[in-house]
Image 1 (cartoon, rainbow, N blue to C red):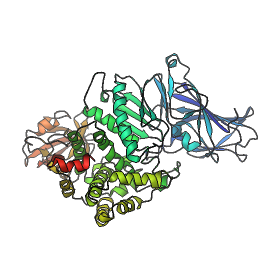
Image 2 (spheres, helix red, strand yellow):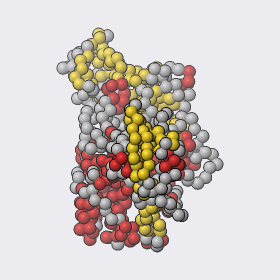
Image 3 (cartoon, rainbow, N blue to C red):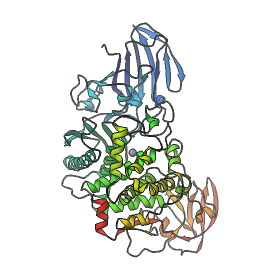
Image 4 (cartoon, rainbow, N blue to C red):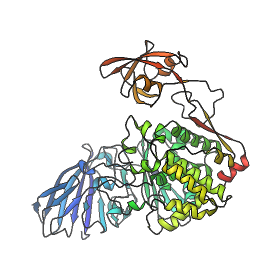
Length: 598
Ligand code: ZN
């Protein structure tokens, strides 16, 4: 072994969920080598302190044990030595998430940020990773799926892989399991999807659909694609959802029931959700993995790295994820309009949009969006939902002002050419300046748009913009707790709005949040209260709406609830549900084509 930095990782004890890592450093710092674990993983903006899962670190050189000293919560300093330094440690891996690591007798999964200590001062050096199999009978058919470059290992095999530097090392998650492999080409680039976990999916069908999504996006940014190979790592579970973007791959968690079975045709809402997730993470291959906020060049992994720009990196990506499903020919125009109706509905119901700007939401992602509490609905706005609304409006504005000559696609290509390709970081004003320079005839309107949607909490009036493209935004009252919007209802009935969200509880219906200024808020109900009766009738989550339905709008009802162990009585004056549920109707197909067909 002559490489300067060499990691050997083994899923050594699947039952105890422990990876064993051996790190060998040929030329350690003679002052005492520092080793550091990242505090967060790029793409997920929360401090997670991965060092907390590190168990029993030991160091030696030429057979002599060395002492390690703690520097801070994520850093160790090893006693100086003259020869090769060998550091051994275990990492506890028992988190069902795409952001960390997970190990048991069914599979091994890890992100480099969870398992590889950085060699401080030598992060720029290439390194080698020896990936070994678990020493258990169940692992005899396991293979390795990762976009780490093979050194001497064969594709999907155990053995030696390599990375250009530490930043590269931690951007290729690894799945080791007995998995299903699907392969396809998109614009000449080999793509793979790996499905691990128990599933009944038609992988050929999924490959056909992904191919259309990938080719559409590669052509949107322009060939050639920036990666030599791309991998969708998919962990199929009973109930889960999530994705994290990487430069040449993505890690996904999805529900077993989201994937189409053999012989199944059509695009169920669940399958649309899965394809939307794939489309989202794939779009990040350009937008955030290569076109990056200046603050992320390079990533500073020891502390929060704030940026105002997540509205663009997550929001524009969220706009395109579903749009591409339609434009690539997978889902119908109607399906697509329904999806954006749901996004608009989520925002309409979110009072926090009137309190927090989207740029503040981006900046405070670390402490607010990623740490949502019961008051989040009142206090914060999602930079995903509002960001995608902003991107949609920007796309339509550019098309309108340039009379169809410029769209958001042009802006994305501009960002790719002028920032992504040349590794130049995007500053706060760059996207706005680019939009105005691509569409000078719309400069004033664009300026006003950005001022409203990015820096104020005022609602922008999208109605006239939609009218230009032949659709009308309509609102109606929510019909029940499951009504997510997006669709018209034949005869919407007036329903009451209590202003709470609820969850199951052994004693009744537990209030999980209370919307400011609602009748529940006026009456003094609070998050955590367990409602046990409405007008003396016992309630739980499943009959809550039914029991409420016995009463008319305007009526005052008595609600009994426990706060801790104290029984309290509340008087709720039932109000009518506001028209906060959005859907779209098509007025002019030809005009709509100016947006959805070009
Ligand atoms: Zn994203």
